Structures are given as C-alpha cells and as structure tokens.
Image (cartoon, rainbow, N blue to C red; front, side, top):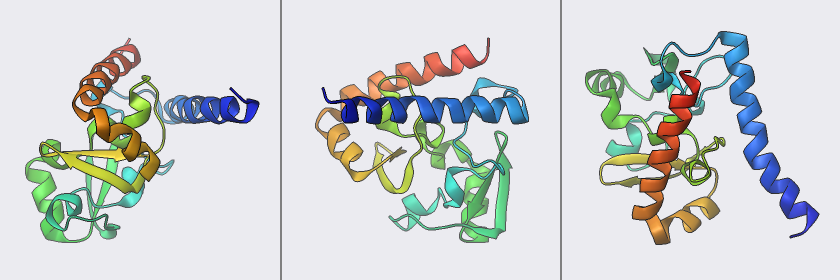
Length: 162
C-alpha cells in the first residue's frame, strides 16, 4: 500500500471523527445518541439539502432558510412548506440513515461527510455517500453492507451515550 493511499484512508477516517468530536466539545454531547446528525458548525443537517426531495422529486434539492424544522438537535432545510410538513409528520421516514454520514464509511464504524448528490433509496430508506465511487463500492453487496453498517451505527451511538 502506498503512503498516499494510506494517508488518504487515514484522512477519510480520522478527520470526520475529529470533526464530530470537536463539534461535541463545542456544543456539548448530544442529549441522546440518536442526535448524532451530520450537521455543519451552525447546526444545519445534511448541508441544507431537503431530505424529502430525495423521495418526492427523486433528486437532491437544496433547501431554503424559509422552510426549516428543528429535529434531533439539528436544523433541517426544505424546498417547500409541503416538504417541511411531510417531514414533521414522520421525520424517521425521510431522514437519511446513519445520521446523514457516508454509508460506505460506516462499514468501518467511522463517520465521513456525505455528498448530498451521492445517494440511493433502498427499501424506502435514504442512504448518503461521500462520492459516486462509494456508491459503486457499496452496491454489489448492498444487503450485507446495510446489515454491517447498521451494527456499526448502533455501536457508535452506544459509545457516544456512555
């Protein structure tokens, strides 16, 4: 393994983890482990993209400051009042898995920032990825990957709540 590949992997694993840890120090640890949401330093979830639009419009749509909702310690943005209202009724239905962090990285129990334009809906659940390459790596073993990432996500949340 070349040094460049090794450093790239370490960066992918360590930097997001350090970012999450620093955000907890700056804002306090979440009241519940479920509050581990991928959010910017100003508390906006999934870089301000509308989680409902993935389901209704079948595309990534940037949300608006005009349509927001506070849920699990983060501010969620929506493209319309209708999308906001749908989310308010059933946020678990629309929220991305693993708090909006990269699903591929979750296989190792690590958090990595996701690109809102790299996503898939599988069995009615939204999964976000760091890149299209992550989607390509994830898809061939998707069922197994979901099971593994679900376990890793549970362990990560459990460790944060201690």
